Structure formats: C-alpha cells, structure tokens
Image (cartoon, rainbow, N blue to C red; front, side, top):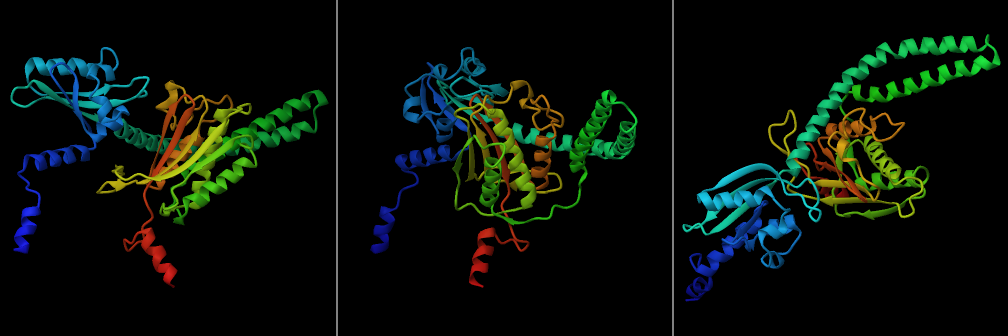
Length: 391
C-alpha cells in the first residue's frame, strides 16, 4: 500500500504540465539563444540563453517585438519574413546583430523555422560565433609566433655579430675624433645597443624547450605583479581585485606567468596614461566551465575553465588593429616594438591556454583562459592538496 501511495505521488511524465516543465527545462539548458515570435513579430517566449544574449529578462522580452530588439534593417528580420513566405526552415551564417546596447561584434549563426503545422509562429535559434572566432584567431596568433621564431633565429645569428663589430669600431673612433663628432659615435653605440635589445627580445620566440611547470597559485602571481606595478609604472593607478578564493592551482611556470601579467598590466597602465585622474585596473579570477579548445597534437578538446582578466578603463584598442593585436610588430605605441603581446600569446599557448582581448571605450579586458592543474595519475589539484595536508 505504501509503495502504491509513493507511485501515485510520482509525477506523470505524460501529464501536460510535466511535459511543459520538461520542455522549458530543456530549452533553458541549451547554450544557444532560442526565441519564439507570433505572426506579427511579437516575442512570445525565450530561453535563458536568449535572456543573457539580449541582456533582458524573459518577462521584459515578451513585452517587445523582435524588431524592437534588433538594429534597423537587421538581416534577421528579413530572414524571418522569408521563412513566413516559404513556410520552411532557413539558415544564415555570420550575421552581425551588434547594437549600441548589446555592444559591437555580436556575430551569430541563425536558424529560423516555422513552429507547428500551421506555421503561424516562428522559432529562432542564435548560435553566437564570438568564442569560436576568438579561438580561431588564437590559433592564428600561435602560427604567427612560430613564423617570427624563424625570423628571430636568423636575426640573432646574422645581425648581432656585425652589430658588435660596428659598436667596437665606433668606440675606437670616439678616441680619435673631435668633441663635435663624438656625439655621432655615441649615437652609433646607442642605436646598436637598441637593436641588440630588440633582437634579444625576439630570441624569446626561439626557445622550444619544454616549459618547467609546477602547481602555481594564480593569486600569488597576481599579487606579486600588482606590487611590482604599484612600485613603478602604475604607482598612480588604482587597483581593484575580484578573486575567486576557491580557484584551484594551475600547472604552469611561475616566472613566465609573472612575465605575462606584468606585460598585460603595463599595457593597461600605458593605455590609461600618466595623467588619468580616475585610472583603474581590475584584476579578476573566475571559474568558467564550458570553454573547450582542440589544440594541435591533442585527440580530444581541452577544457579551459580558469579565467584570469586584466581590465582597464582607458580609451580602448583601435578597431583597425584589434583583430591583429597579438601578431608580431603590431603596436599602438610610438616607440613600441609590437612583440610584447605576441610573446604573451606564445607563453599562454605553450601552457595550453588562450588569450583574447575585448575592447570598448572605458572597458578593455584581456582574458586568459587556462586548464586546471592535474597530477600525472589524473588526480585533480584539490585531491593532491588534501592528500598533502594529511601527511
């Protein structure tokens, strides 16, 4: 009898209410934005991903029409009209739905289909391309870093040796020329020293030795970088920290990570400028599951759940160089070499991660995504630390 009562209290999977709840749960679990509109274009339903995409709650969305959420003349509106006319599903790839409110570069793949036999209502699925495109660009940046590696090796061999001879000759001439001409010999020495430093920086790209790694606490690295910055190039900048204290360690080279984040923080400080009254740099860490990348040499995609960000409220990165920001010799600085961010991309790539930039006026974010530390026997970092605490 007790068993029968329990069975009677169990939800009936064929009950219309239960079916509707299950359908809503499935839609909200989808990573892509799903929107349903009536024949007049009014929004009648939306899932959680759609709320996130349009930065608006479902209750607010169903008070608007689709046209009110999109820019004037949006290709999505034309696609919906074609689906109504043909009463058949249609797709369109790489459509920009960016607006001043949503932000630029909201590139999506669109699938539009009639809903139901009558085909009066329309269902729209938006698959955002941003992450995929950023990963594609990251792999391109790695290829560019490898290309500059061969160039750096050639420069180191073919240029540094003649430069030492030129500098030596200039020093000998300095002892035999007049005071008026001595400034020219000093100029030769200074310029040869500058070129040698540039070649030395490029030699970093030629180092293919395996990275010496250990379990590293990223918060210790960021605190060290902040202290160095506050003592020097960012002494007039206000720092904000937003850390996830439960974040696990990463399998990385501590010195190289310090080099990476020192470079990113220095770029942020230079973007703010020395006269910025309200200049602010935010350092943040977070756990973001769901990002996976198939790297060269790996059979399965690698999960990159650890997110480390450096944000500043400067003027932002110009649109014309944003896509090539991590390429060698690309820079916005008058005296810059354009190798700093290329080296950042190489180091993070060597660690199995990716680095990306998202820039808007007064909010530029450099985001580093990396895998978690794992022992050779497959144990996670938390398991290893718990075992060590028992010893």
